[in-house]
Image (tube, rainbow, N blue to C red; front, side, top):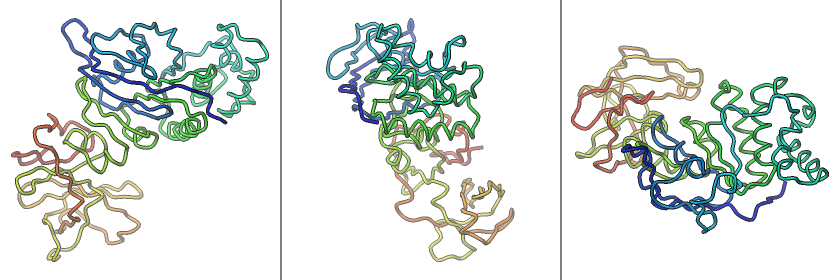
Amino acid sequence: MADFRETGSLQVRNVSKMFGTFRAVSNISLDIQKGEFLTLLGPSGSGKTTLLMMIAGFLDISEGDIALDGSSIAEVPAEKRNFGMVFQGYALFPHMTVRDNIGYALSVRKRPAAEIKARVDEMLELVQLQEFADRKPGQLSGGQQQRVALARALCFAPPVLLLDEPLGALDKKLRVEVQEQLKDIHRRVGTTFIYVTHDQEEALSMSDRIVIMRDGAIEQVGTPKELYERPINEFTASFLGKSNFIQQNGKTSALRPEKIDLAGPGHPDARTSGTVRSVTYFGSMQRVIVDTADGTEIEVDVDVWRNAKAVKPGDAVDLLWKDDAAVELQQGLAAPNTERFEGVIAQKSGSPRLQ
């Protein structure tokens, strides 16, 4: 399917949002390229949905400006911005057929019937729901309903599509399937997608770039690989994936669990040694927790297929990693309470062990 938009770049300049005295979003600047799949990623309360609602026009900005293709839209009401929107709850009309739901935006715009039919047929093909065109939403699965919502949002050819945790209501298996479909649809239509999620795997698997947010501000922006391989601080390293935090030459470095190898005691290239505390089996990999002699707790993710030798609790082991595996972090940007983030096993600067 050809790219049918001529616009779609967004410029966010020094945007803030106040709710009374509370600053929900603080001085954010961001350039979003036409046709980009950009994800706003962060924990609850990070400001990602608030930022999306300001881009949509559902919330007024307190400070700054938002522009579409260089022209300010800060004073343009939501219905005049012509952006598509997809929500977690689908927001489909239960009394309408799939076809009528998809064509609704064109119907209210008083487009000719022939144009609506042709466009809806195109959208049904895009989301692969041709055979369900005459069904009601209640007769569809959750994944099918979400595809109807996506088709409806794209039917009127918006320059930008805003997606607010659209897969949150789906189970894990279905979520993975719809992720792949969503990526394919984005590739085919070329619309600018701005996607909000707190799910790290979703962000890594679908995005061209990810904006990591915390406490209403941007922590880091980059491609999934850049953020995963070169995090600038403990928050990014721990929120996007898992990391051990080690001390090297008086500085803190992030070390991903899968970049550590285990060996028997006495290995000439050992970085440190310790005792296996626990081993947890996850099918393709095992999670091994090692207590080192200095009290540091380190997680190692072992590829089961390529590492036939099993370890068990109580085994003495050496830990090895390459020089470039440990990424030095910027000082003064460490996240508070890093240990609260799921799956993080870390040593903070100056503290013995995180539980």
